[in-house]
Amino acid sequence: MNLYKISFRAKYIFALILIAVFAILVYSSTLFLVKDQGKYARCINISGKERMLVVKMLNYVNNLSHNYTQNYKKALEETIIEFEEIELTLKNKGYYFAQQNKKEYISYIK
Image 1: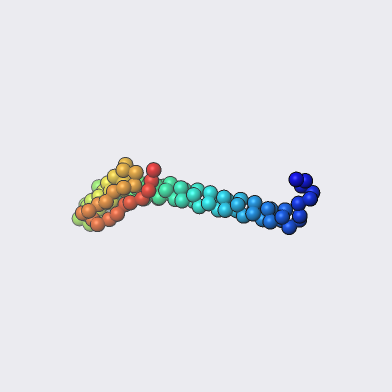
Image 2: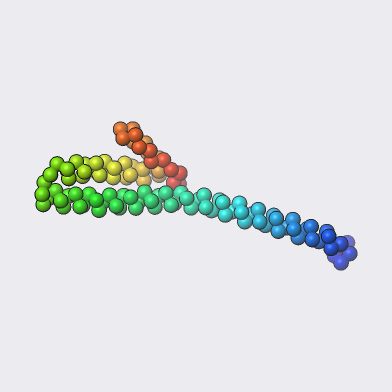
């Protein structure tokens, strides 16, 4: 079969089908990559929150050492509890359920 004898219409349909297949492949690979990157974004957000809590704890410790008040002590204790929950979340690759505080840290970090 000679390529020159194929009608223009058949060539055009073949080209459109080829473009559609490539578009579907690109779309599905993009969806897969975005979904995969979401796992890492969750981990990075939790790590950033952990870093923020460390700064918060240092601030409370500094305030407690200069002027002892019950408010700073209570805030420090709450921050330490939250820090420990996040630490468990990261150690367990995102799966942690704190029943005492009714908080959920569930993600799909692999």
